[in-house]
Image (cartoon, rainbow, N blue to C red; front, side, top):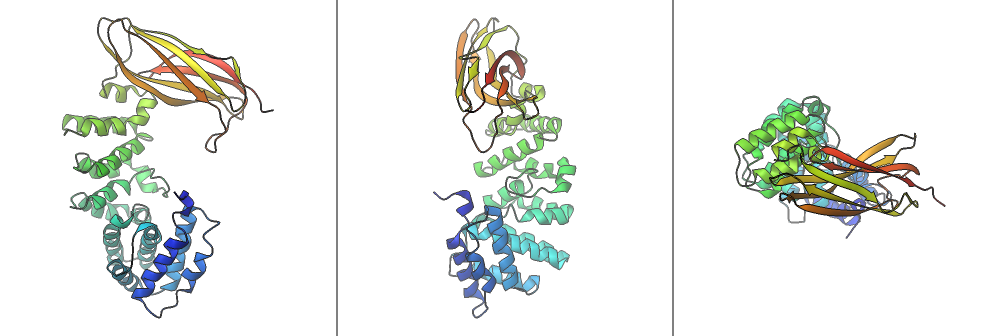
Length: 369
């Protein structure tokens, strides 16, 4: 399986060249030819941008001419799908923005919808959303009624506030309610592919507007279908990890009472850099009714400035019968990884039950060497 940065490699670039050359025979594609040899040292986004810019240099005509070429390639005999689509869709958006006219803008949105099933156009619509959010969203809202699940997903995925790998759209961040009509139209979609996007969109919104997200999720649960509860649970996952009381209550996890917790108990007071620590705890439901619990744990990491910062990790969701006792155990690794840097010094582990923290055990991460 290729690394992410290799998804747009020489094969994708050559397929793009062949598909375009078949539509405009005799046109020199020198910029694209040169780009093939420059991909290896670049990241995935940089590879896409390189091919986008090369395509625009090799086809320097107006928007209408460029769009006709892409449409013809779409219906041509040679393959025109997969990762080559990312630079193509990005080029369409760039060309429409450079044109500056409403006709080019609207046509570009149509082209992106037509191409999205061949990979995705979710990254390419971001510049158009940024250029004219109201005009773009007017088209996006029509996509929610498309018979094509890929287009319906594009409506949700392309407008996510924090879409991975994508540039932010300041106007969406400034007005989180702007995309609510889109996800409100799709939360009961028949396609799981679309519903997953809606859940991720809701989760994105929770980073800025947790109360708005809980309000929206409550409205969905008041008018659900068979899949709504699962979608909402997925969409509220970050708020649940943060212990947001409104999200937890909406999912049926009330503030824990009559719950006795012993622990966490640590396997060591000191661990070597790169090592692993184990903790255990015993949780007892002393109430006369069952207790449904979301059990997480927080690792308080030492930061470079000597302060601590907590990160929440999922442990389990369980229901304890009256009087039931449950032992939990977990190993936590401090192995070096590229996404987190560890600093030696004071650390701690704390349990979290339905958003309420309980117990804290301190330990020391030793320096390297």
